[in-house]
Image 1 (spheres, rainbow, N blue to C red):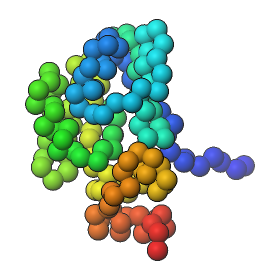
Image 2 (image 1 turned 30 degrees about the horizontal axis):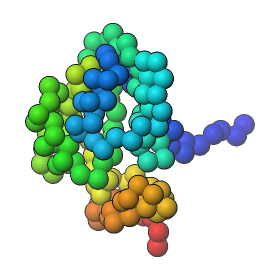
Image 3 (image 1 turned 30 degrees about the vertical axis):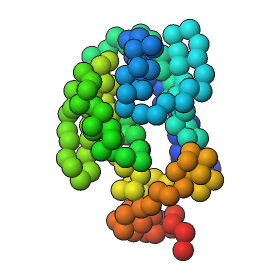
Length: 150
């Protein structure tokens, strides 16, 4: 029997306490582009993917389950977090930035250059990010899997 292959993620769905508060909080950290809205919902573009927010989070803060978000500038997120009520869980200057948002969603922020995650050149260009590059370690990981251009 043929099995399906993982190709990526279309979206991540998160519960927050209040949509307006969430948009204000995430807007302090990231450039937001709304894809759409509905009662108790908001959809934030993340390039060719998106984050779906819905009101009504009731569970306790996440301990291990998390969202790994790729950004162009991890240090900008680190600086922006200083002026929020977010709880920083782990932060190292070279690679790691983990935090809990006000509703208990656990975020792990990684920089595009450091990891094997890639976007097609036309997607990067459409996002205004065509100048992004990869570290040697990230390129080696991509080459090892046959995912890097020659």
